[in-house]
Amino acid sequence: VQPVESGGGLVQAGESLRLSCFLSGRTSATYTFAWFRQAPGKERDFVAGITWSGGTTRYADSVKGRFTVSIDRDMNTMYLQANNLKPEDTAVYYCAAGALAVGLPMAKDTWPFWGQGTQVTVSS
Image (cartoon, rainbow, N blue to C red):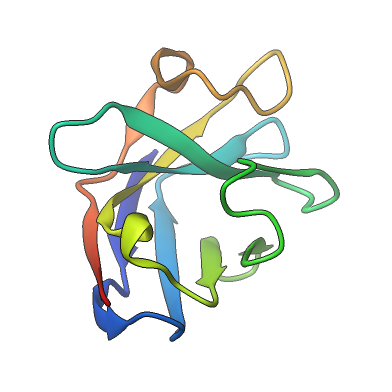
């Protein structure tokens, strides 16, 4: 499985972006998927996750109510709708995937497959 992100860019505070993650390769109902982000000089942090069915999602407290994760199984694509963006949301956003035994873990080392990342910059 190889995730490929797209949709990043430069926006002003308060604006929105939709990030996409195309999941090439063989996936199945056992897979779960997540978005992480990494700001300069900081750790890579969990943002949101979703199961293959889309029935279960999980969000970091910092994005709850502003970001929405979704999945289109027919298109093999996961999305992150990011609304009301803030300068502190500036980071490289990464897509992760894995056939994980436990839910939607926030620990980055749990996830085996990663994309190359897409830059999101929010100006004040």
